Length: 219
Image (cartoon, rainbow, N blue to C red; front, top):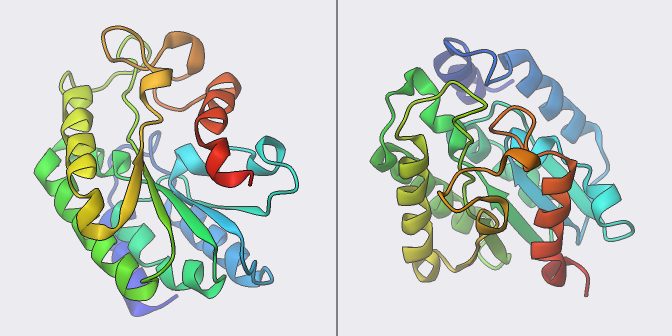
């Protein structure tokens, strides 16, 4: 573990007051060691993010398509940035990214502007390390407040971050994919039939997500 990663684990994951939402630091290390021990997946499609990505069975959703899971449950944008060297080492043909939701967990005090600043650092770092790699940025998902105890402005904050992602697509050379709309109800919350805990997609939701992006993966 590098000094930079140690600092991240201590500063972000180490003092997390909501362990039910974010995994302990040991899980981050476990996943990083797993990734490092795998052969390189040259030309693959990488799914990059936090638990929403981690918990999907991408092999089952896209059999035979060389889709590689690089999700780590509980990860923040700052931790994903530290993983970009490993991502780049696979020489992926494209990367699908979804991250930022956990940044709102940090003491429940981060504003949309804080998350936008983290995402700005992610995009700048990504383009420095993988200047030509196609990047697909997927919308953050809202929660279902009836199923989880969360702040009453979370979904509005997510909407503000998604507007930022739309506005900056040309600046950083990515395409924006709205995966949230098919999963939300009329009032903009995550549909209750598509989640078990109010924040994570269930199997039916992952199937809808896969349908939304399949034309970019199955060629």
